Length: 422
Image 1 (spheres, rainbow, N blue to C red):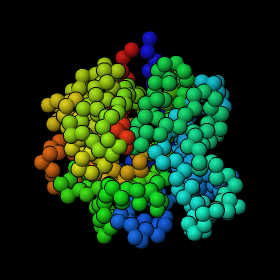
Image 2 (spheres, rainbow, N blue to C red; image 1 turned 180 degrees about the vertical axis):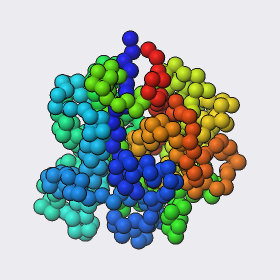
Image 3 (cartoon, rainbow, N blue to C red; image 1 turned 90 degrees about the vertical axis):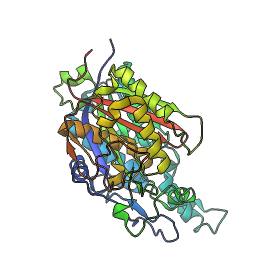
């Protein structure tokens, strides 16, 4: 008998305010958190806007050790995991540690700290023979992406399967999906799952400037992220984290946990096509959607809402519109589909987990978040993108999809509590 997987806790650190309540309030009000970059001087960059988190590790109760020696993305994850575990009511100390796992995703890992300390050890690039004494003595924590999962695992004594997933912008979806399969297959009873990234740094922004993937609307940052709108001209960089507590369904019921929903399907495929390009047909994303539906034993007409990748680049928006139409058929035209990147930016590997958190909250509150700034339709994107205003709607099955550099295409399917059968 296949084991069912419940979501029992949510934690979010996002632009516009830390915490799940602030995050949901931002989404349902259709507010945007994009602004001019303040984390460093962006002069000289093509895109000088981002969705930043106002975040102080000490104010969130992190130790001096974590605050001084870990990168920003690790700190985000620790805070989000703390909220998720508290929300779940789970006493991790009372659990069998071999049955508790961690699955966290990140696209760029410790890039921010590595760049910061390289500037120090090289005297702003002037020295080739760098002076290591200028670096943080624990800089190796930024060098190893595994730090993300290992720090959270240590925090909660998790000795089961522990992994850091890095599959570009689908890292968050994939980390949640791998956690789902870990529980479903019986390798753990509880997995702390999600993703975190802090990519707002000179080197990361320059990388996306070079391929003109980010929006140059520096004079109007609030309206720069325009997924599916015919005026769109690139995404807005973001940062943040989201963490969920996933539990085997009967394990959660036995301790009287509040069950937000179930993870009912997950799949990922590659396009073997191009590092940054997408095919116009959306075949790989459609295959991921179809496989997730098959796992959940659901007909495409059962999907009530699609949380889009919706980056605001022309090739992505058209690609996933085609994929959703291919998988859902005529039902795609009756299904609302929105992008929260219009409000919180694109936090690379973290955004998939943040979007899954938004889907869990949509199921909880029976509300579809809007696509902010959507005003002028693109004739090639002809679905219902929920323009500007949140929409009450009866939701039972919600789909979240994502695309990642390298050709990754992933889909996670969530079902409201009590919606699945054995």
